[in-house]
Image (cartoon, rainbow, N blue to C red; front, side):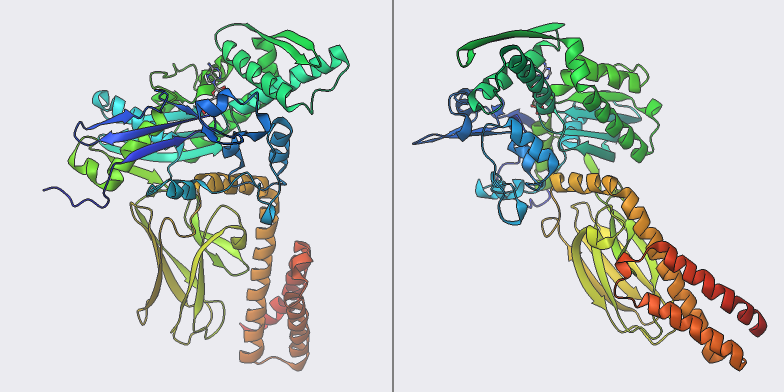
Length: 568
Ligand code: AMP
């Protein structure tokens, strides 16, 4: 029996690439994916838009007139999505771009009009899911490989494109694709390598001719395309030349660059790619020796040094280059779209996709500490329960705040929703309340809190498109978590010290009320409690160092422990 379809219309996959874009469609009647040609008959379209006095140009037409109309031709803008104008990485890009980007409200770079999802909606599409590029590529690759796939296969996808870098490790077992881990950098790719060559030649030209070309948008634009071409040449030749007639103030520019110099200029970036690879492998808990296939995707994965370093990392393993690096993402996305519409259930790609959570999911606990319930890179569907405890005597309700993110401080993460569980029966602090996170195959999260003794419940449903983050924002959050790790560790250490001190004050207060203490002990204990409470209630607690709380706890212990020993 055919399953009822959830959506009408064609299932389309779009690879909105930094440099090139590609569109594929699932052909229901032929049970296969087809790449859609653009109006020029090309299978990929440059991600360029240009504005002239009387028209708007897109793709090849925009790219072809870029040198003549540099300030009105917009390209590479995907690198801005999810970033602030004042971001140092963006500042760096701006120096290289001939078109203008200004700071808008809330420090948003003004060239970015709409995020990816909104852009799809404006184009009249029903945007069902934004999936990571390597996952899409892996689906394309997996379909291709499935026929000769016996047992379990671990596939590592290395996708280095024009402006972004993504890697992922997934396992194919029969029809099941399971993404074990993903990692990436939204700001690393071929454009960065181009920038390094541009700077190199700008310096050379300025030095040789005692001029400064850095303000000349047209010259920079021409140099940039020449550098990009030279870079491609260096993937198969050991030297590349650039020839720019009447380049600047009537001066010609002829020069060359060797592959070795290109590699030297970019070595730190290549190494950064390898660090990301390492992080993904560590996150996946799969030993790199157990990786069966290392698949190259994205134009920049053709760079020989990148391939050499990657092969070295995987102990000399042959790299797979069979997949078409320019079309794989759109291809896989179309398959995923077909799966989501339910269409593919009735036809060809008879596979089950298991994706992973791109960010940890959890709740805020006392002291604004993020308590993770479902860690990042967990395969879903998944259901996990945890027990938390009330923090006050006779606490009648808890406010649950649900977040996604990697930061230690809950409020530094993305708030997904909040709700209150009330009707907790009177009980001393430490009364259990359970919380269950249920993430279904479509990424819909249902969080339920329950007080088990009376069965009181409350829950929230968080759908994919309400407050959830785009792929770019996800990667930014992960990057931030790494950048702020030291600060976050300090925050957690202090939060734990505060919680320990609060618990200790609670014990001291209990002893003061319930035990028969001599007047001298009572006095000592009262003053220890007062001192600790004054510190805990300090309005300026944010700026008090961790050691102050630790010292206060130690002083309190010196007073209370001997008294406690007498009452036992
Ligand atoms: P993608 O985003 O996957 O379309 O990749 C585009 C990027 O790949 C651009 O930065 C291109 O300059 C780069 N690229 C394409 N072909 C080559 C090549 N043969 N060698 C080095 N980089 C290349």
